[in-house]
Image (cartoon, rainbow, N blue to C red):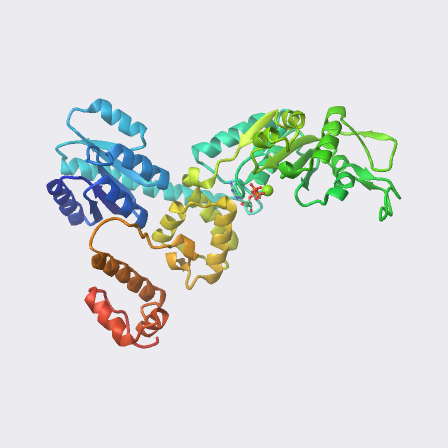
Amino acid sequence: MRILIADDDPLQREVLQGFLEKQGYAVLSAGDGAQALRLFRREPVQLVLLDQRMPGLSGDQVLAEMKALNPLARAIMITAHGAVDRAVRVMQLGADDFLEKPVDLLGLLEKIQSLEQTLAVAEDVAELRQETLPDAAPPEVIGDSPAMREVFSLVRRMAETPWSVLIRGETGTGKELIARLLHRLSPRHAAPFVEVNCAAIPEALFESELFGHERGAFTGAARQRRGRFELAQGGTLFLDEVGELPLPLQAKLLRALQEKRINRVGSEQDVAIDARVVTATHRDLRRLVEAGAFREDLFFRLNVFEIEVPPLRQRREDIPALVNAFVERYARRPTRLAPETLDALIKYAWPGNVRELEHVIQRSLTLARSNILRPLDLPAELRQLDVEVGTGPLQERLDAVECELLRAALEQAGGVQTRAAEALGISERVLRYKLAKHGLKGGTGGAP
Ligand SMILES: Nc1ncnc2c1ncn2[C@@H]1O[C@H](COP(=O)(O)OP(=O)(O)OP(=O)(O)O)[C@@H](O)[C@H]1O
Ligand SMILES: [Mg+2]
């Protein structure tokens, strides 16, 4: 376990660090909140010991940021003696435990060991769950974060009703998956789930797609065809990207929903429809309504209930389980993740949300050099060096970056100097010189 100590008192830092290192822990230390956050971003850290009172960023602020960055990291707050009310607040902020000053080292060790135990138990449970899952399980919607539990609870309650549901969320958050879940949990689950991507169907064909057509209704209509509304009879009609629907089609959709009847294109006779309508969009429909690009009456009809699927960066707790599921789905041989890899995955911002995560895992597994997925197997945007302006002499910081690059190159080259030198575009002699300068262990000379 790697522990980060953040305390502005150098003596306290030294005492804690010395003690914990003697117990066999890897320890990093920071003299203020900003430095602590920098280290936390860069290094995989499982536990943070935070002094609550520091100049600059307070322990509370640092804790809140760390939890946003990696909710799985554990934290113990160190508070002033007798400040029990503050300690309570600290726990509410997400600390796992607190200690009063002066720190009782054996008490600290006990708390750390019990946290380690809970981490190990959590891993066991995750493994067990994977093992007992039946092979033919339906495509699962993964998510144990408070935000996703809230979504599932909404879905469960809405599933029983006949009302329309609008699902909102950024691209790749799982809106379609939620729509399918809503159908599966509804009394209509035995009838079809029919999807229409409003953005993908040409405007001219939309009406016939949705409502069907009679033979000869227009050029190319060689036979009668039922539309998606009819195909979804008794079931659920999922209108994806509904925000892209042009205004004239919005009017037609609205009429169908109001009258619960449709006319096939080219037919006088109307057909009764019974489909529950679920829609999804990554656009802000209210804004579109204000701008006159979306009909307000249609909006109210589609939006009887609303589900907001939160972006992945607001539920980072879900990342490990999603990663496990995707590794299992795409790995062609048993593959594990190095702890640093999972750490990088948890801290990344995921603008493309779960879909981006899925693609990253798929791609990294294909390119991985061994059956352990290392940070170097991840795409470049996930392993960018943490270059912040910060403070300090330029040369020192350039050296730090150089050292980091050398280490990475050697790791990627499997410790073979010839290959590392080649990758860096320098001679082996220069590489050896630089390794010695940074006190790095050199790996081996030639090819394996
Ligand atoms: N909670 C989840 N558990 C498992 N897989 C998920 C989850 N959320 C999303 N996915 C996967 O991520 C991918 C994208 O999900 P989906 O298509 O439902 O997103 P979307 O919100 O409809 O995206 P878009 O806005 O781009 O249409 C799919 O492959 C889906 O299986
Ligand atoms: Mg979608």
